[in-house]
Image (tube, rainbow, N blue to C red):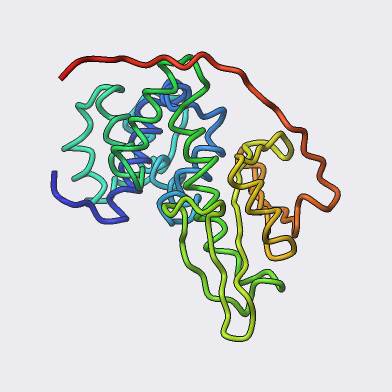
Length: 249
């Protein structure tokens, strides 16, 4: 498959949501369309309304109970996408969405499959909300926040350093920002052992940035020096049986 443009990716997301409707939402782990528009839009780096508009573009072509843009012909570039991908079943189309939306497709799909094998909660929607969509939200909005506005940003999500973004300025020590996402307006979040340790070391230079309410209208809270503020963290220790497989070579 040729490399798709951002507009083509957005059109494909709209086609999927129109064609598979509620079944498609549930298949990917979304609770409602607003959540899907927000999460997919932020993950791609487009306005959520764009995903909705493309869904509405295709609605007249499917018996989903919505009229969509029924008073005009479908736009040619949308019809081109429809002609190529309409025949896809829900499994193949869902895999296609993962391929074009996941930034680390192979690893994200592997982790999703592993979680399912271990009977842990995992879905396309959950992985995006707790990672990619929340991180894109932060990158788009951090400069609007007074405490961050004079800083440059470096993505450290792949460095394993205990925070997702390093904010730096010639006149200040760097800040570490760990980003978390919640689909509701409140909920539980956790820090890994490394994140907790780095938060202890950085103190007031460590920020916990939480993006909330993907189900409706996303908004954020942030906590400077989160271990020494109003948040109360409870330590959880889990004893597991470690299984290994041995051979002779």
